Each structure stands twice: as structure tokens, then as C-alpha cells.
Image (cartoon, rainbow, N blue to C red):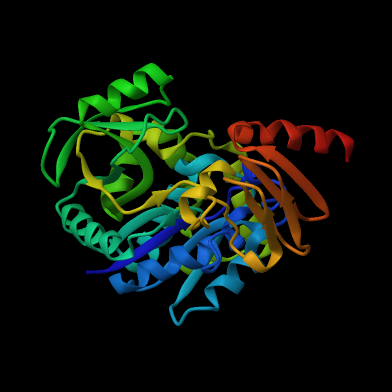
Length: 355
């Protein structure tokens, strides 16, 4: 089977400011103590024996991405976007390149900035998904919810049991009451953003459901794979015109919510989205008092509990506090209550105004 993972690595991750910054987003940081998030994403794909790894990212992260690829003995290609236009454009960009490169490989679409603890189970789920994709299905991986999260989208399956399920519908981020109902129902799953399909299947879906995207990318029809991957002046001008004109829309909303050949595989893989500083607790082991840091040499906790420290350069001491996160990075220091983690974006907006 011809397998080519497509890793989405273009996001800025402002909710993890100041460690995750516009010049170096969270996927290029070691948040777990086990390597960068992008490094971990590539590593867990290698047991699937991919033909190569394709990474879609911003031009300004080209060098950072190349440095991560150099850590592995696997062929890698970087497709640079002139500007972010959400995941539908990124997926179509990759699919058109892969059609020219390899005909009809099976694509594994996944974000660069997620953390997965159960790597063997991830591989098992992927192998199951690859078999379903061979049948022409658009496969989604649904995460079994462990609590009523309001920050994730959900996927509802028709069946309430079985490892392969027909998708009923995608649902937007719910309020707390709806999230509790979803948990109780037993057939709602967190949308992981991990998708598996044949290149031909997703291109057919684009032609039917997002013809405007297909029209915008029509200049790629006269280019070969090497040219599509190129960033020379002439090609870059073509790409800029495409990305300037294409509608910003997610592949979930534009394709998957309206497709009729969708299946879901429920997964318990120790998945963490890492969308806030509070969420980082999911990937770090606590000490006896519940305190955490990816580098305990840079953290001192005295009479404190349930606190976390992330530091690029300095040693940080936390005394007499509870439920606090302290971050030092990029010449900035952030101290927040974990329950206010979603408000970091407000700080970023203020910082930008003061710049």
C-alpha cells in the first residue's frame, strides 16, 4: 500500500503564548520532555512504513520544519503556503501534489501539534483506517470523550458499538449541557482532526462539494509534482494568487459534514489537543503534590500543589500557590490560573497592540 502522511504544521498556537509564538509555534517546542510535537508526530507514523512524509506549513516555518525532518531517515517534502487559508486549502494543495507525484496514494491527514500517549494503539487504529480507506471511504478518527469538553467539535456515529461506524453528523462545539448529553449518549466522539482517505476519493469530494477550491487550484493542472513543491519566483507567484483567491474553510465543514461515504473509528489513544496551558497537564506526569514541568531542573515547588512550570531559559520557583501555570519564553513571562487558560488570547491581543 502506498501511504503518505500529510502533517498540518502551519498554525501559530497563540493559546500557548509566550512559548508558542508567531516565529516559533508550539509544534516546534518540546512540551512533553520527549521531543518537539512535530518530531513526535513524525515518529509515531514510521511504524506504518510510509513512502514519505509530506508537511504543509507556512513559508516562514520552512527551516524549522526541515530541521525536524532531518531527525529521521525518511524522505520528506515541505509544501509551503503563502498565507493560511484553513485546512480545506491545505488538504487540496497536498492532494494535487500527491496525484502528480504518486498517482493515488492513501493520505493520512493529521495535525502537527497533538500528543498521543498510546503509540501502539495509534498504529493499530491507523492500520484499520487504511483498510477502510482502500474501499473508498473518508475515514475519521473519533476520540472517546472522558469528560464533557466544550472546546472540541464532536462526531456522532449511527451505531453505538463496533470498531467501524457510519458517521451520522459532525456537530460544532457544544455548551456544557449539550456536552454532558453527548457523553451520556455513548455515540458522540471528539473530532481529532485525523483523517484517512485515498487521494482520488478526496479529490472527487472536492469536485462535488468545493468546486470553487478546485477552480482556484486549476493552475496546478499544468505543473508537475516537482514544480508544485517548488518555491521559485514564478511558482510562488502562482501560489500566492491561488491562496489569495480561495475561500478560507475547514475540510471538516467544507467536505466531511456533507459527504456520504464517511466512517468513524472510535479510538482511545491517549490523545491530547494541547489547546491551552491547562491541557498540557494531560501529557506530563505529576509529582506527589500534582506539580508538573517537562524539565524539573528548571522548576522548584515549595508548599505548592497542582502547579506547572515551563521555562526556556530561567529556573522558576513557585511558593505557596495552587492551580497556577508559570511560563518564561521569548523574553516574556506569563502567570495564569489554570481555569483562566482560555483567556491567554486576550493577553496576546494586548501585546500586539503594545508592539
